[in-house]
Length: 247
Ligand SMILES: [Fe+2]
Image 1 (cartoon, protein in one colour):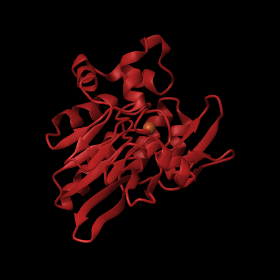
Image 2 (cartoon, helix red, strand yellow; image 1 turned 90 degrees about the horizontal axis):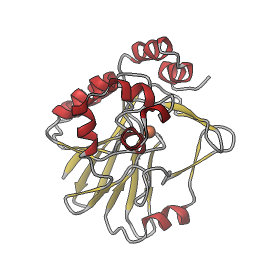
Image 3 (cartoon, protein in one colour; image 1 turned 90 degrees about the vertical axis):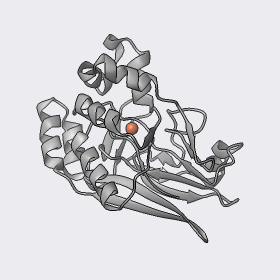
Image 4 (cartoon, helix red, strand yellow; image 1 turned 60 degrees about the horizontal axis):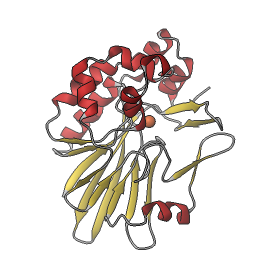
């Protein structure tokens, strides 16, 4: 069993194209996609067109995808409003058909945040100043209670990370395909930046003696997307796409 894991594309179709090309070059057909396909000022419509065409992709919804369906357009924020404006009824129906979680080959569990909600970080805790810290193992294991899968996949934080639980199960976040940094301005504001502008994803293979995990960081024309974000009045997005930092 060998497959690629992608997450948090956030409308960055150029990053998605680069990752799909890289996955193909690795000789991998099966892709698991953990959601937040949309949300942000980039190209939600083009991203949806690409995703709908993918036949060997198992996709679930993220919190931003869910917001697009649940909230009235007037209440969508600076991330989801521009995405919603680009999406057709066909695109919205594709989102509506996505499950919130999924299981692959009986051994791999997919969720966007933690198993019980798409809007919490499983492996990360926001640093009170800047960035994300590794979450305490006891808290990570608490969210894994009752989920008896060898490999459990999550996104949401945009941080590439692998954690092995004390009983040998693994939780992996592949990082973000299209959004290498963001400012969360809600109740407890924080900044997350990865420090590089690459499109991140992971490859997982089940081998004779255990699971093999590879994180990949793929270059693409990130400056084109940074300029697009700036032209659409989103300087934080432009900064993150420019170099992986929120300046
Ligand atoms: Fe996200």
